[in-house]
Amino acid sequence: MKKALCIISGGMDSTLCAYLAKKEGYEIIALHFDYNQRTMLKERECFNKICEKLNIKTKYILDVSFIANIGGNSLTDLNLEIPKEKLHEKEVPNTYVPFRNGIFLSIAGAIAEKEKCESIFIGVVQEDSSGYPDCSANFIQKASEFINEGTTKTCNVTIKTPLVHLSKGQIVELALKEKVALEYTWSCYEREDKACGKCDSCLLRLKGFKEANVKDFIEYI
Image (cartoon, rainbow, N blue to C red; front, side, top):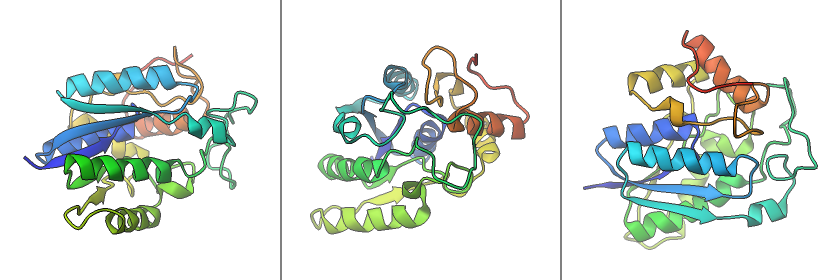
């Protein structure tokens, strides 16, 4: 069976990508990163539930806490405040973790080569997002080039980004259509008990459910 490495954060987008990979007939190798982010424990819990739901046998949970040591973002630095009610301001918010997807994809490339995966699925969204530079289709294309350039000739990996040009409303609609366990996903940047409802990630998620005319499955404060 063909294999796909799915980077699953525990969020809605990456979870939907894993469901789409399974629908395409891939055996899924699941990859999750712990980097001392504020909601690390909740995200890992969601990842494990999603793997169980999809009956994923092989999974990696990797400690990449050096990302927090680098700092420069409010997801790992508790001295920085997470912006609230500031979605779609012109500047990239401090929730941007410098080159995070570049780091993730470099590691994913190594695992994909080892596991003999032909595809890597990542749930980046360019059109309806906070404007992170490492979530663009152009960046993903270049990442695909450097992974294939830096691996053996027998390794030929395609990075798949099925959501990159979708709106959050379209993502929610597709997730509902594919019967994704959205109740096991988490988007909030700040809290692990109930979502704050005001950070960029919560606002984007709520926007998607509103556009899809459906009530969200998780609790908010």
